[in-house]
Image (cartoon, rainbow, N blue to C red; front, top):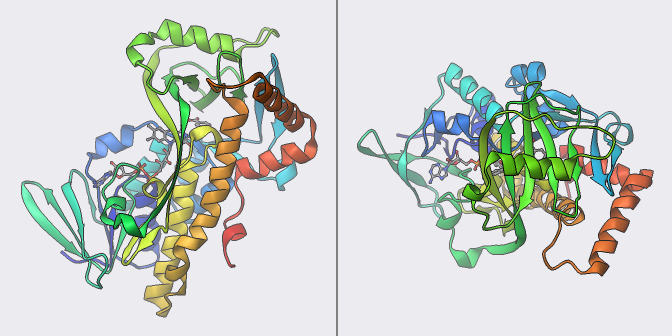
Length: 396
Ligand code: FAD
Ligand code: DHB
């Protein structure tokens, strides 16, 4: 088998890269180790930045997103027993976020790829990368009981944090930046009508909580929990009790309860590797960087990376120019570090740290009050939350 670009991983990064390359007339094969059913059912992120939505729509994969996505112009911060509204669109020239599940984006991109008749190989095991430091790289894998070799010009490592691509780069060639947080999120998906129109980020003495949604019938909720939390100790009644305690205020607003459709624990970490390229291998999305989910940046960063990579590959094949490929890592990392900062800041602002001193608790409260009261501080939150335009990180 031969292609121009071998893409490892059919998450948002790999699928969107395949889609953008196809539109640019570049051949790619997407290789995924899980089944289609598994990747389409994986519940993860849910907030799309304005630029992510614009790109998906412009690429032709945004039809259902435009019909079913929930456009939000604000969020609420809840602390001190009161909700404080943060306007997202006023300070950002009308930009907004769209609530649309990551698995829906994945479904739309899989449907687009299959409709195009483009290669997308699920259930490929034992994926291994070869010759990334030469000019004839390749990928080997097993599928349908046979061993395959895919020869290519470039490899895109879009296989997430636990994939094999990053590990194919010699450790001596990578710098790793990392922080783990002393808590995790317990997330549920509930069959209950969302009781509020917008997201609520709550800082509570019992820990952080987040109210979100997926549709007019489905609520998505998260609770700060211990990093080693045992899910079996969290029957639904305990989860609801804790959510009521952290999210409800004295004004009579109540969460709607409903059957819990799914629950899971998300660890919290910040992680970046530099550079995001080695020879013919380009890393994109979670394969190169992780953010704690508080800023809702993970999937959006994956999208921004592959947009940059698709444009660089289009310049290589279409114009024989390699300057954009050479600049890929540096271009992506500028946006990555802005999102790392914002995600760390949102996380620090809203969570209860086990070793938090009274001094730090007062600083946290002062910052929350500042964001809620100062138009300048709120505008900064809004600008980062809806996402800076792609152009803000391009050029020197
Ligand atoms: P992924 O979505 O991880 O896709 C990687 C793909 O590669 C997967 O399909 C995987 O099966 C495949 N793969 C892995 N190894 C191999 C291999 N060896 N060979 C072939 N294929 C391979 N972000 C938020 O903003 N909010 C959230 O609430 C949130 N929740 C999350 C919950 C969890 C459990 C996780 C893991 C992440 C969450 N994120 C969240 C982060 C967000 O979902 C990611 O940033 C996003 O999925 C990144 O997309 P990606 O395509 O880079 O990686
Ligand atoms: C959702 C997830 C996030 O990490 C976040 O910051 C906001 C919303 C969600 O899953 O809806």
